[in-house]
Length: 309
Image 1 (cartoon, rainbow, N blue to C red):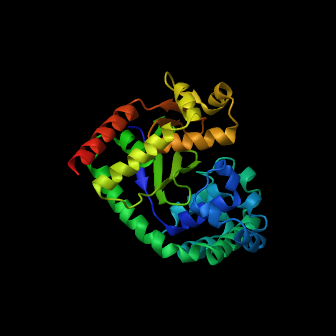
Image 2 (image 1 turned 135 degrees about the vertical axis):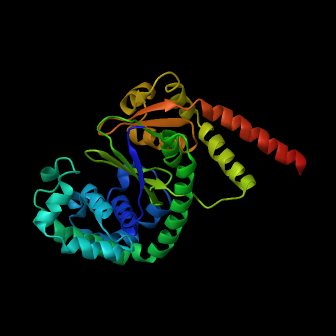
Image 3 (image 1 turned 90 degrees about the vertical axis):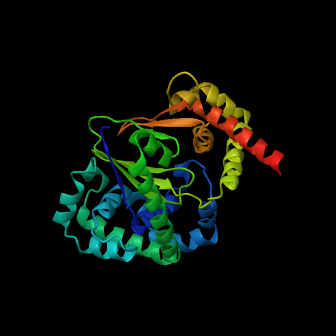
């Protein structure tokens, strides 16, 4: 395998993910969850004035790399204090080796830094502070479980795909690191950022369901719901032979891009679609044929449970 797997956990990542979700709600193409619902209406009107200019100037990729480099992962305040204390030359030294087209993303680091500090402080105050302690505990438990699984795995590529729930990261010469970060705000999707030699993914943490019977029912429900829509069956039929680009699927199905993206997220989450992720290149999608045998096994298991009751 050509890349290193690295886990990282700082609540500052989740602050950034949640802020990104708030600013770019349409960026996940209509994929709604309990967080997007909470961020709308009265809350959005009250908080938006404190984030003036953030949608155009946040530069989330730069902040993510700085969070990764921050020596203190304890809490969001630790990152904000460290970030605010960096001088412009050090900011450039830390960002330039990783962030593509840095000068285009951030024309002036000196002007960007105090604005970014203000935006993340405001978002922490108005939103993330009440979620931070719970996220930290969940992330710690999730990382302990994931790292134990990684230590036992014999196939790191399949392990990454299982963590990312259907995203297969292609090993290419320029890719040296896959950075995996637990999160909740983009669930069931992943938040992805590509850098010069690193792919960063904020993946959805486990729900905490541990009883095998309950998990089987939840997985079975998710898979059958994914197949209950004729449009999704049409999408799967277009993925059955070879990996296909998103634009090609849209052309073949005639679906609006936002609708197609929503369907693909559900199909990936249910295990029917594999996303072939390639550093700094367009993703392709393919059918996970194995998902149908997994569905058959779950149906048999569920039927056996019914007979034993």
